[in-house]
Length: 311
Image (cartoon, rainbow, N blue to C red; front, side):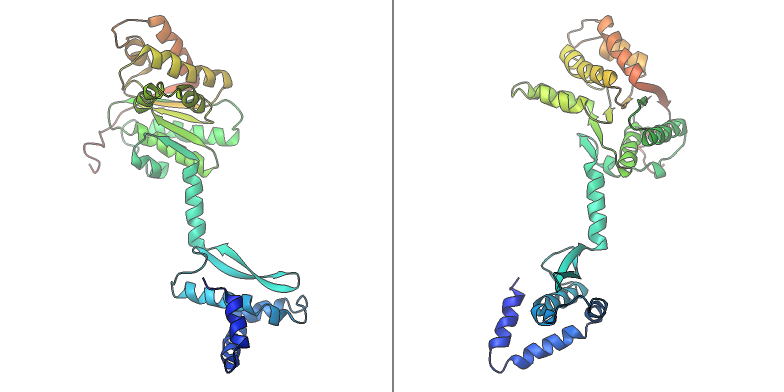
């Protein structure tokens, strides 16, 4: 944008153009916001304040005009406000209501860290969550968790272990919980565990697996989605999932899960049987002890919304 002070100086110094400058400033001084500001601060203004602040007043009116006409401004998303500075008039730019809404929405999204989760999780809302079937029990448990955690975030709160058939809304409920907690100022991490397991295996080659596990295990609130859906390996079970759950149990950090399997089914199948067909029930029991410590088991029953979302 052309420097307004330089523009006015040029207008003032050119012969036969003083009348143009006077016309511009006459319009500026007639602006209702300018008149109100000058009246409110007349005792604070220096004797030459109007002359020395002419460029600022002109800029203020020009930016207002552009905003009213939906034209490009020098600070998109911000509106000018007149302020006092050392007995002179200056401009401060404040975010518009629309910009404030965008900033609030962005801050909300920043509080929810999503790793390989479905796109609709970003807008999951507990207020619109259907309560058909046995979903009402899960919803009430989710609301109770949010309320308890909000009132005492430094205390240990057992999370939820949601299990049930495909498409009953387990993942959406976790997303709704995360967004509700974000609206209250709390950070949550959601991970799709099968995708995370693949990422962890790939990270072995560049030696970043330890950093990834460390970041996940320290999340203030962690939600592990679809646990048990991938092909289990002893490394993922013991050195990834086991490490994460051990830390969170020791530090008493809230953790939620979703799965197609009940806790017992997860233990007897996914955690006990390795990809090689080996059975390690003792290690599976050890992992499940941590899961049971961290979360309460809740079954969800209902129609498959993935196949018929409008039914």
